Every structure is written in C-alpha cells, then in structure tokens.
View 1 (cartoon, helix red, strand yellow):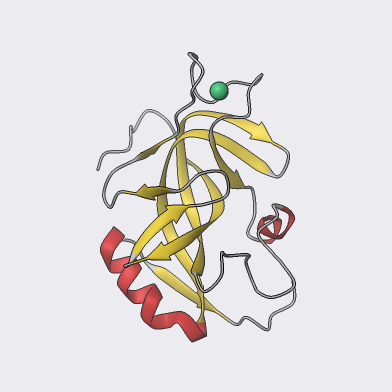
View 2: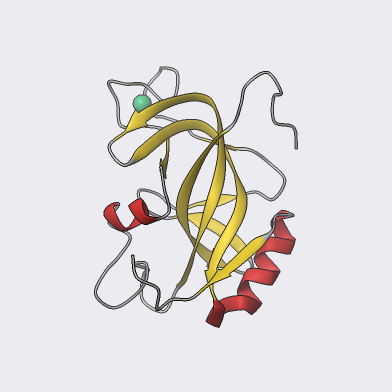
Length: 145
Ligand SMILES: [Zn+2]
C-alpha cells in the first residue's frame, strides 16, 4: 500500500466490527476494510468525497476519548456492537480530502495505524493486527474516560 508522501496523513480514531480477523465499518454501512488497501469513502451523489454540504466521508474521532461521543458506547459494553459481535477501536491514518466533523474528521482515504484493544481480547488483537500488518496496543477496560 502507498500513502502519498506529498500529503501529511492525519490521525483519527475509529471503532470497527471484527469478523474472521477482518475489520468492518458498521456505523452507517457494513463494509470490509481490505488488508493492505486504502479504504476509500464513496458517496451516492456525484461529487468529491467528502463534501462539506453532504454527510459523506470516512468518519474518525479526533481523539480516542471522543469515540465515546460518537454513539459507539451503550450501557452494555465498551463500544456498541450488534448482539454477540466484537468491536475493536483503533487509530487510523487519514489522507486525501479531509474536512472537520463535529467530533473529529471526515476523510477520503484511511487505513488502520494501530489497534487499541482491551487486554481480555489480546488474541483477537494479535490476529487482526497481523492480518492488516499493523501494531496493536492493549489497554485496561477499567480505565476512566
Ligand atoms: Zn456526499
């Protein structure tokens, strides 16, 4: 995978659904992130993505803690996930067109940079990180946010 050198990639934070060691977007749609391929945001409207008058683009929070303001948390878990599913959080590289969103950014391209996973899920973290060729960091689920 190549990230254009001319543009400094920005950093954001996201949550994905994990299935068979692959990452899936699930907030608005359900799309697999291909290992070693940039994730490109698309829009059904005919314009550049993201567009400031549209809601399109890849959403990423500006900080890890802001993920909690993006509707990813529910009373029953760290991050909301459909019944019986597993989610992981992570840092993403953002590039291409990037515009500010309420909790962070909307971007044209993204790729995971580092997975952030509770200690209890280290096995999943190791497999997914290997699949995407990225490092992972374990954290204590009990920590205060
Ligand atoms: Zn759009």
